[in-house]
Length: 437
Image (cartoon, rainbow, N blue to C red; front, side, top):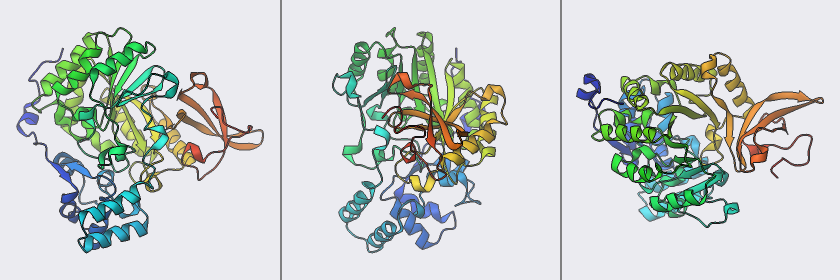
């Protein structure tokens, strides 16, 4: 059991109050990076299209301002002019420069957003039609055994990652929202689908919610014998570790975690760490210690992002640090086919090389990690390597998860393409179509 009120005194006395920074703070913040007035205007222009939000902890504890704008954590949260087509940036800059009406700026931003594929890989499918029960708001049932749930109160984050494939949740476009607030309907859906053994609360960030709200979603599920695990997708450990240490409801939150474990279910924290620097603060070490003390298991995952972590040494360092801290490396993802993918994407061939080189330098305890993996429309596709078969250079791939369970774990091949960055860029090898087509 976790001992309450056991936060390290130094953390308790120096705890930083949460303060959010939004687009209205961009000019003053980017000035700290030494950017010119023109460059700052371009960043403000991009922020009319893509969401921006960060907080005092990220700004003061994680970003190395002496290295900005090239610092990886700066690039992780701050927009860049290169994320959008030059013509779009120029048009938006002109509107901002002449102080155009807000409605005119928003209309121009909306046009750009709609060209950025805000519905990647079937993400707006809340229920897969084959289950035939209609749609439950905020619920996605893509794989037989797993349900994703998007609590209405969890559809924001402590800070936004520039690469986030769910950016469309945060920009005020009502048609792009995924959210539900009826825990009773969630429970009823699970009872009607006994094959479901795991529920993942996601967003946004489920840990943006306070303990009383999160409890309203989780507690009704604890008596369901069919459930083996409850997962929580979160970036809070990296962006706001005080959530589990010094926040007013930190102790109550830990008690809720203990209650889940005591009910006989696995509580799995799906923690997003994109760069090893996010693991360095003492507050993160303490938050990890306290969460693990409840019996929860912390698994780690992140996408491979150009200019931020596209280096095998970064991943090797991160996975080894996570293992030392008792975390379980879980996934390296490929950047999704949405938003500024052209800016962040790493070709699949290079992604495999980075994964392989990082993987080669870690111990067996860290080799729980899988990747590079694409969460594509038919399922999670892992790139196993580049091989030569029958005299032809090809990608070897397999499904880690699939809408069609019969395809899980079965290898298939795609023609080698050094420029391909996503499953849709690939062509089948030795066949006229892929197995799911």
